[in-house]
Image 1: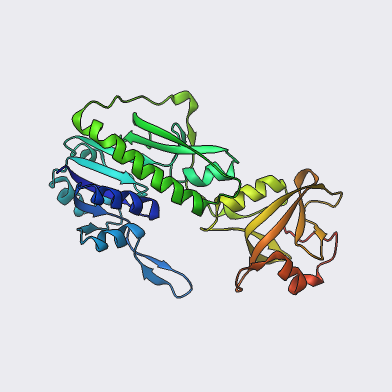
Image 2 (image 1 turned 30 degrees about the horizontal axis):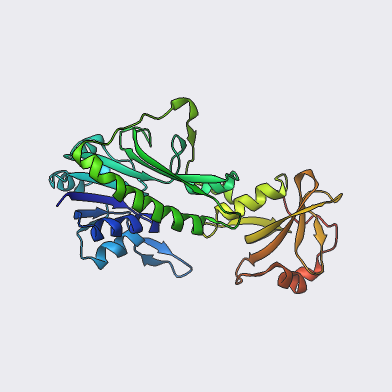
Length: 314
């Protein structure tokens, strides 16, 4: 059996990990991020990768920072054939990568060299891309800069959000990895260097990027909402109150109302944005409330908003 140290954190990684287990790879250790406090009650919650490792009774390591951890030497001394990562979320020290007898391999959620970094799937939606894909690549010290073993494309559907795209990409990544690993192991897989002139970065989403502003067009807002659903969610400020927006619909209409104004206050929650564009906010969540349809909000608390009133704060 080929031995593996696996590193990952979200569902994307959990799907890849289970694929390795079910295909008879010997997983010597699983490394994932420390448990995090989640929700209003701040309940300490394990990552999906940890839950998957527990399901198969695998050794689990959760260092806050792997390069400076006690666990690092333990992992190196396992002398695994392969080190495989899928959305782990930390840089890996070179001496650890070099400890793999055969290769250190990453399953990356984009068509490299586009979208190096921690949020490739989110950026593909935020930027309105029509396709994305998965790259199986060699891990090196520089972030997502290694040579590529294999790539496969995936169309982005108009109704895709980050959650649905993550699920599709996880399956694609799992299957492409399993298809590619035999040739990596026997040395017959040709590696292809990345074209550095085409590098695009996708850093982790910042708090500032989560906010919807009225200087964005309706399409830009719609794509931001898609890219941040289900986590962390895009939001806007309406008359001083924070409101998350979970779903929207771009219209073909234009308006003469200023950006940020209420365009329709009857059967829908429609707001103007830059370039005279109009967006229907179809699912929203005021602070402290449950998710609700935009039209239900307008029939309730939103009924006090006036047509043409600028409701989005700068």
